[in-house]
Amino acid sequence: MRITGTSTDNSTRCERPSIPDPLEADSLQHLLTTKTLGRTVHIKAQTTSTNDIAKQLAKDGAPEGTVVLAEQQHRGRGRQGRNFVSPAGVGIYMSLLLRPQVEVSRLPQLTLLAAVATAEAIAEVSALSVQLKWPNDMMIHNKKAGGILTESVFQANLSPVAIVGIGLNVNTALEQFPSDLHSRVTSLALAAGRFMSRPQLIAAILTRLEPLYHTFQQQGLAPILPRWLHYGRIVGKPVRCSTARGVEEGVVLGLDEDGALLVWGRDDSRLRVVSGEVVFL
Image (cartoon, rainbow, N blue to C red; front, side, top):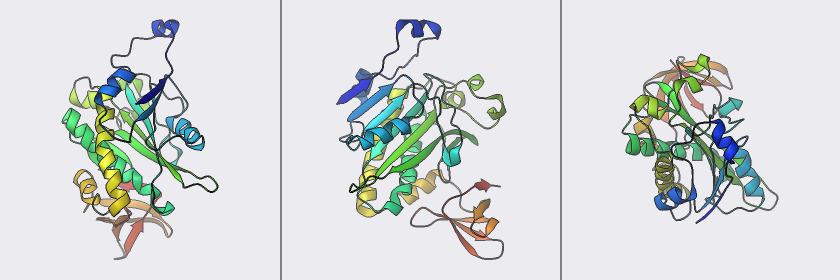
């Protein structure tokens, strides 16, 4: 296993409390059991966004399964350009480089795989009840605890690369979030009332994701959708969504075979929502 890292100098350590479970090579080496995912890991003390680093590594020819981790992000981002708050030493800010042998149109479906793996890992490590909110949010007690952002890298004469970014509030204290988010966000530690091991969670996510990824490449998304719906309890819920026809309201029927949201509209039409703003009412 190859791990590279950027250490923090002594003066920086003195300026802030020590991190109780730093992201270090030894702990990850002992916990990772995957064959491909996480075999190469880059650890950064701080960065703009781990997705940015992973994109550059992809262009430089980094192998599939490469993982980028950061103790802190200064410009962590979520879906539709939203900011993902990433304070130092308390969250999982991770990007995974994948080179799937599938059609380009299927790359966004990796978000659903990563969501399943992350939800199962959280349930395993913390015993918390996790709910997935289509398409990419992880909710605990109806508050956002994390999200997933999948981006693509295209290069001439090369297969496309997918960068799957996973952001998770693990040991984040309430005061580390902006005050206007206090009623809408949480962390695993806040929800469970105890400290959580970030290396253990990272290993659990990658361990869960690797077989899902193999299934996805061989059989498509269909075998994975029931596992998503187990955590994404959205069937029958009223929803407001943006479509090509404008803003629509209806009731969720489920997910299509490609992961699109299926909605029964108020005018008795059947809608397929693949992107845009979605609000569960």
